[in-house]
Length: 83
Image 1 (tube, rainbow, N blue to C red):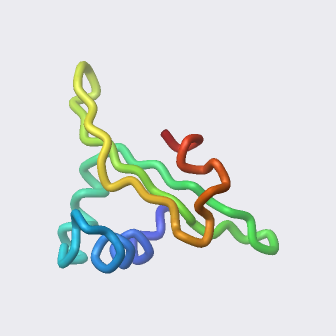
Image 2: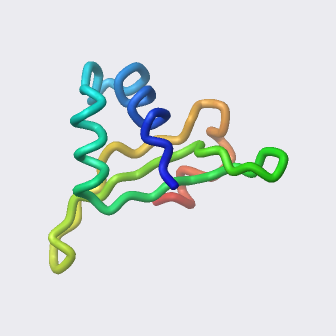
């Protein structure tokens, strides 16, 4: 399950392309897109550490956007794996 609060906080505070985006807009964009999360197992609990959103018509077009890996998990190859 996607952690919408984590995604919102990252996009609003840590991205250059979505600074100031409202929680409602982030949530609506997730609901209306094909989304993927990357998770890290912490003591048998999954913690989301990455995200990617695809805007698509599910036939011929897809646009990758709002993609990130939390700074604490960068340089582990997760970026390439997610792509």
